[in-house]
Image (cartoon, helix red, strand yellow):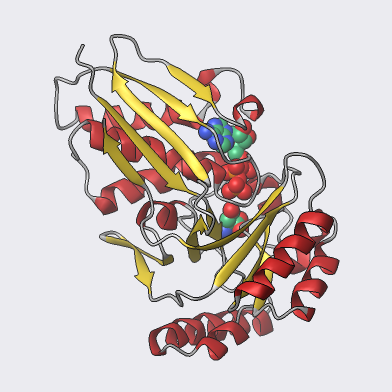
Amino acid sequence: MSGEMVRAYAPASTGNVSLGFDLLGAALKPIDGSLLGDEVEVFASEHFDIQVKGRFAHKLPSDPKDNILYHCHQHFIAKLTERQKELVPCAMVLYKNLPIGSGLGSSASSVVAALHALNSFYHEPFNHDEMLLMMGELEGQISGSVHYDNVAPCYLGGLVLMAEQAERIAVQLPVFEEWYWVVCYSGIKVSTSEARKILPQQVSLKNTLTFGRQLGVFVHALHCGDRKLAASVMHDVIAEPYRKALLPGFDAARQFANDNQALAFGISGSGPTVFAVCDNLDAAQRINQWLSQHYIQNADGFSHICQLDPQGSTATRV
Ligand SMILES: Nc1ncnc2c1ncn2[C@@H]1O[C@H](COP(=O)(O)OP(=O)(O)OP(=O)(O)O)[C@@H](O)[C@H]1O
Ligand SMILES: N[C@@H](CCO)C(=O)O
C-alpha cells in the first residue's frame, strides 16, 4: 500500500439562523483561530477500519458500525463502484472535536469531513451537487429527516440558503463580514430527532405569513447591504416557542443579550447551543463572558466568538 493520506476539516455550523427553519445555515469560525469542527483522515490500507480520537470521542457509540463514518464510507464506495471497478482500499480516523447533539452540526461535520476526505482521496469523482446530495442523505439517516442546513454551509462555507433543486441544492448568500456570532454550547445533549418530534405538524396561517415575509426580507436585505433591516427579521416563529423549554436558562440568556446590544439572539439548530449576533466586538465579548458564566451547565460546555467561515470544509493530501 502507498503512504498516501488525505486529511479533511469540516467546520461547525448553525442551522436555521432563527428565521429560516431547515432552509438557512452558516459555517462558523472562532476569531481566536481555534478549530471548531471534526477532522477525518483517509489513508490506503488493506483492511477497512475506523479509529475515533478527540475530545468527544468517548461520547460516540462504541461499535464503529454505529458511527456515521462507517455509513459514509459504505455509501461513497457503493456509488463510486458504479463508475469505477478497481479501487484502492482505505481506512479512516475521525477526530471528534464537536459535541454530539449540540446544535453545532456535529454529525454534519463528521459526514462532510468524511465524504470530502474520501472524494479527495479518490481524486474528486463527484461534483459539489452530487456530494451535497450524498451528505444530505447521510445526515438524514441520523437526524430523522433530510435537511441540508448544516451539511451545506459546512461543505460550502458562508451563509447558505437551500434551493433543493436537482442541480442546485444550495446557494451562498452575501454576508456582513463585520458581524460577530457568539455561540455558547451549554454542555447538555439535545437529540435533533427528539427536538423535531416536539414541533407541531401544522403551522398557523399567521406564522406561515411571518416566516415567508421574514425570509424574503432577509435575503433582500443581505443583497442590498441593509444590516438593520436584516437583523430586524431574525425571529423564530417555527421552533423556538416549543424548543426553548428544552434549554435551561434560555430566557435569561436572551434577556441579557437583548439588553447588551445583540442584534439577534436564538437557538443554534435544534439546541442547546444559543447564538447572539453583534456588530461590535465589545458587545460580543460581554455576551460571551456572561453566557460562559451563566448558560453553561457542565464541564463539556464552551463559548466562542465566531465569524462566518467563508471557506467551509477543506481537504489536504499529505
Ligand atoms: N460521527 C458522529 N458524529 C455525531 N453523531 C454521531 C456520529 N456517529 C454516530 N452518531 C450518532 O448520531 C446521533 C446524532 O444525533 P443528533 O443528530 O441529535 O446530533 P448532532 O448531529 O450531533 O446534532 P447537532 O446537529 O445538533 O449538533 C447520535 O445518536 C450519535 O451517537
Ligand atoms: N434545521 C434542523 C437543524 C438541526 O441542527 C432543525 O432545527 O431540526
